[in-house]
Length: 271
Ligand SMILES: [Zn+2]
Image 1 (tube, helix red, strand yellow):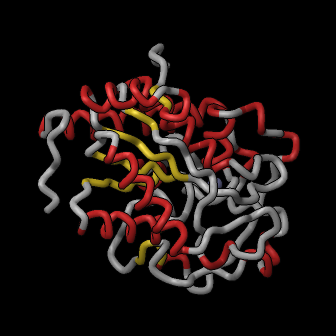
Image 2 (image 1 turned 60 degrees about the vertical axis):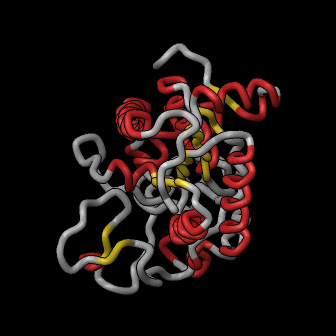
C-alpha cells in the first residue's frame, strides 16, 4: 500500500483545496449507498467501499477525494428491504450534478465518479446532464470496471457475497463479522444466460444487469431471507486485497491518461 496521505476535501481548508486544484484538477467522487449487507457486513458497506478505494487511489495518484454523500439511489428491486434507505432517482441525479458543479467552482475540471453500488442507471443520467453543461465526468463501477476476477473469485460479484465481503475484509475489517457469513439466494425472472452478471464479460445474446426488471423484489424473494446473494463464506482478506489492488492500478492508469492529455486548468472539450 502507498504511503502518501489521501487528499480529503472535508479535512482540508478552503485555501488548501484551491491550491491543490491549481496543481491537479482531477477529483474522485465516491458513491455508495445505505443498504443491508446481510448479517455479517454493515449497512454502509458500499459507501465504505467507495470511500476507502478512493483513499487508496488518492494515496497512489494524489487526486482529490470529494466527500461521499453516503446515501444512494437503488434499483427498483431493493426498495422496501429493511435497513435500505433509497434516494429517489431524481434526488441522486440532482445530488451528483450539484456536487460536480460545486467542486468545479473551486477549480476541478475532471471528475471520476467511483461507484460501489448498483445505481449506475441513474448516475449515468447525471453524467450526460453534466456533459450538456460542459463538464468532463467519467462514471465507473468498481466491479464492472474490473470486468473479470474469476482468477481470484469463484463467482461473479453479487451482493454481500464472496466478492463484496472479501473487499470489506480488506478495507474495513472492523465492521465485518465472518462468524455470521452465510450463503444466500436470489432469483431471476428470466434465464440467467440472458443477463450479464456484475463484473462478467459480455457475450452475444446478453443484456447488462440494469437493462431490465429481471429480479423479484428482494423483500418478497424467498431466497433472500439473509439479504445475501452469492456465498459470503468464501470471502477472504487475500482475495479482497488482490481485487482492490487491481482496481487501484486500473484507475491510476486512467488518471495518467487524463493527465497526459490535459494539463491542470485545461478542460477536456466536452462542448
Ligand atoms: Zn454492496
